Image 1 (cartoon, rainbow, N blue to C red):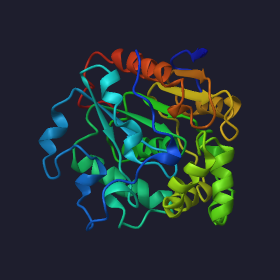
Image 2: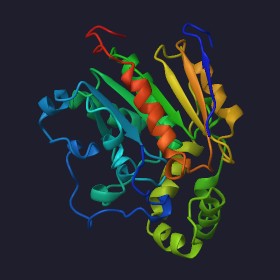
Image 3: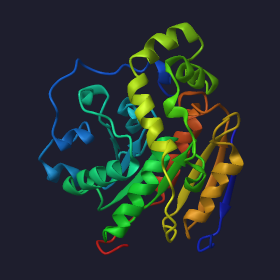
Image 4: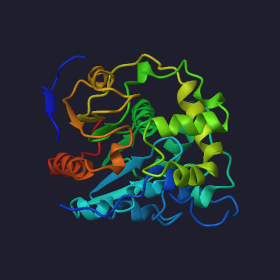
Length: 296
């Protein structure tokens, strides 16, 4: 079930594969040496920027706190062939497990923006982020704009309150038991909490680091973006209720479509995912013409 409400432009302020539950995502291969910047984007060939131009539109995807790029592993199968899904792999997980995770958003945004530019992924692109990933996607879009680069052609924010509602929390200082209770309360341990806790145990350090990113974030007032946006909220999400997701309207002068989907905070892994993917496909399908080189 979903409902949609669109703000007019210029306002001021099929079946999918079974999903792996967030607490049961594998962390990837055994730890290895520190990898080059190309491993921000698994699937792109490091040091080969030309590959970034083989698809007319890049959908750059950011995961939630403690998550990995594998959240988006099969999305390309459900989107138009002209869309290349580019999941972002942050340090501290999967192939980058030996790298220290970020605990401050500002430095993460700076380094990630540089990697996007190095791989020429900002010429014709859209951004999708869930929970912490939505906050990261927004800040990356702002950083690119401030550097004179084009804004994304579309910004998707999912399971996330608006940026000014972040910060002033202390979840990152919880002990391991407290973090497990937090994740379970959000629906992140799956149907068998005991099994989910086992999978979660090895990911607690990176989860704690990601929570520090969110808890210490302070929004910097700035002009709204101009790109269209779509916001997704879960009907039973305790940390990003619909009215806090609705507050994203103030962050673009373009249109904003708010879709309400059945599920808890991890509706990205639930029965609502086909509706979400159809919505993403529809919005990206409306971007028929490539972005102009001088689009701001």
